[in-house]
Length: 151
Image (cartoon, rainbow, N blue to C red):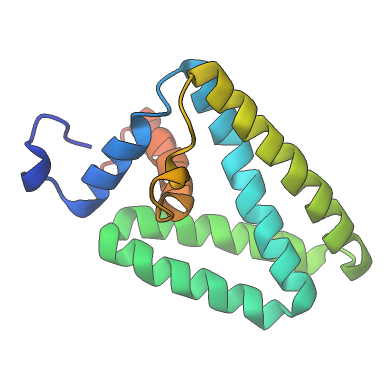
């Protein structure tokens, strides 16, 4: 992400990630998000999967379309993550998916709010619901930066 450009000249993905990062600077909050955001994505997909697997695929496809408009490289990473999550869900016993996902979902959100308490800032999605979709890109961006993968 290029923070040296003026906000008006940044790509939309850079602006969204920059705004998201403003309330996720504390290293503990960042770590919590890197654990809890993928857990929340997995559990949401799991709860949708428990209704019908095709619904989970439809949600993934819809999100990926949005991500491809923002950044094809981040969208590719999200595709790989979603493929892993959907594969795990397909391998799990159907009777376990809903209760396990509900429990992990609650714990992951508790973790998120603990992280924001540590940060001293409210979650970004309180101001803009798009940040519910940007959170996974933030986590992927952290990974990409550590691996020196441009996006």
